[in-house]
Image 1 (cartoon, rainbow, N blue to C red):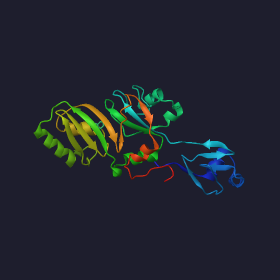
Image 2: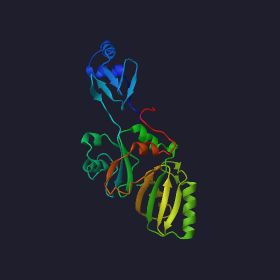
Image 3: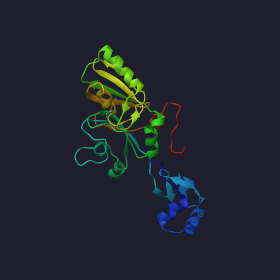
Image 4: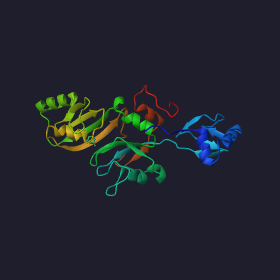
Length: 256
Ligand code: URA
């Protein structure tokens, strides 16, 4: 979804229910500030996160919020559910953010009901689109516990199949090359650059090996905070918001 943009004359005329001529006068009287700068040009386009003041009063301040959560098992990665606790319910219970703000958040890459670990939430759809866009190849890392132990022969064929990609007939796609690193007999690390439905379970399913536990511990350069207990959430720092894409990448609300 693109970041919402609107011309200032339209925005003010909708807000005050006045015509374009009145808006022109209001601007000429220097009564409107956008991001603390007096605005005079009627053609200026503002976005969802521009802070707009009229006569010193804030009339729009949609500050972007970015959160990480350590998702517990048994919680749905959804904004609403009639049957289960959702990640939004957890944000409401475990942070001081207002319910309205919590309801404005969306999930940046889901985890299955039983999966645990790093999940990101934001109200900034431009950022989330960039994190999840397949072309950006942001790597997600998972620790996976398997029902069947990996022998050296099995390891070789798994590693090969993961790196070559697997054909998913339902979506008619071949998965992007994925990395598999064996940590213990039945514990591996998987690195993916995409997020297909039940992707890891389906990939191990090809070998009739059941995923017993699945935990995501990083997305791009962002690693799950060890200090976060299950269900714990915290805001990301400005460095983390941009740094997720790598040290040289830039992301801030002014570079639209
Ligand atoms: N792959 C899965 O199968 N489940 C997840 O939760 C994440 C990746």
